Amino acid sequence: MTRKILLVALLVMSIACLTGSRAYTQGFGVVDEAAAGNFFMVGARALGMGGAHIAVSSDATALVYNPAGLARVTRIEFSGGLTHQRLNNETSFGPGPQTIAGLDDGRLQNNTRFSSANIVLPVPTYRGSLVLALGVNRVKSFDRTMQFFSEDAGGTQMAIESETGGLYLWSFGAAVDVSPNVSVGAALNYWSGKDSYTWLYEDTFRGRTIDDAYKDRYSGFNAKFGFRIQPNKYLILGGTIDSPVTYTIEEDVTQITEEQGGSEVYFDTYEYKISLPFGLGAGLALQFENLTLAGDIDYADWTQMEYKRLEDAAEANRLIKETYTDALRFHLGAEYLIPQFGTSLRAGFYRDPLPYKSRWVNDERDFFTAGIGFLIDQVMTLDIAWAHGSWELYDLGLLLTEKYTTDRIFVSVAYRL
Image (cartoon, rainbow, N blue to C red):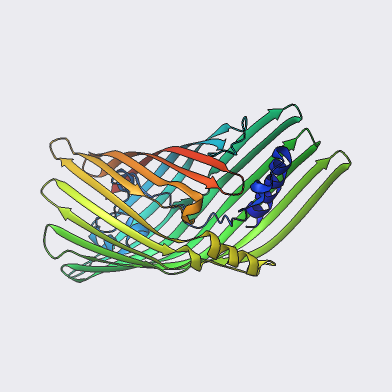
């Protein structure tokens, strides 16, 4: 958790020496907790509709978006999916009169991953609906990268930062109809995942090399509750509550520092906890003959995060209050069914706000999405979706601007008996 503070402080000191200005030593000290935000989406249909799925989820993805939507499933369903992400970061120092020439660079990161596997089991009832579901879904991404290179008469400086991993949600859910137009549902969740972070810094002028690696293993539990109301054939309303989750994080640290006078190697393993806040969601959908329009909002106050069982927990929690803010994520989407071809066309937009205070954010994470779905032999569906997003961060201490662009492709398959 504290690696970002330490590494930024080190880089600040290095650049301060390079430029001869103390201005670069001001403003650093950002707690960077990967588990805060970073929702990656689940399911190609949902992504194609910009993630607006609280009101309209009626398949296995309801485990993640709104468990009450499981009550709409009438047949046994098996589903799974893959994701591919292309992430690019362009790094520059500036803007402003103190821009450092020659310190611009970029780095590309690609990955393809298993994203989901679910089974939904409707239980025969005399009236209403009772549906059970079990699944695992990759819901958060830790992928991030940065690189810069500088050369002058005094030597060269180079830094490469890379982070990869994510969190999977293992869920057991159930939903029932409490009336013909009202459904409620809940899911019990076990969170697990890994985060691998590396930092390589070389300064030939001072003969210094720093090679750090952090490997984190996350685990935790929480619950999600949801409701779905359809007062008429055109309107659907939905709402969700995510209970706080407390992660237990086991961290392995390796730090290697080489200087002209020798080298130093440090190893350590320790464990700490972090508690995340409540999450609230609401969704609305309008359904016409072949057209569905949907919108969602999700809210979380990230200033309520809290580190526990950490040696510098008090300082880290103080920095959380200074660094983080509350965030309102919103999603808009549309789906149009072409019944003659058994094909659905989808489009959407969503904003996934960076949870940091505005002084660190130049542009928020905005995504435009599109997708297509095919019904095959009345028992199988194939959904494909694409999202293009961008955002920009600005580090006050380094005057470092990082501009990210990403393209995500989701492929989902479902089979219903």
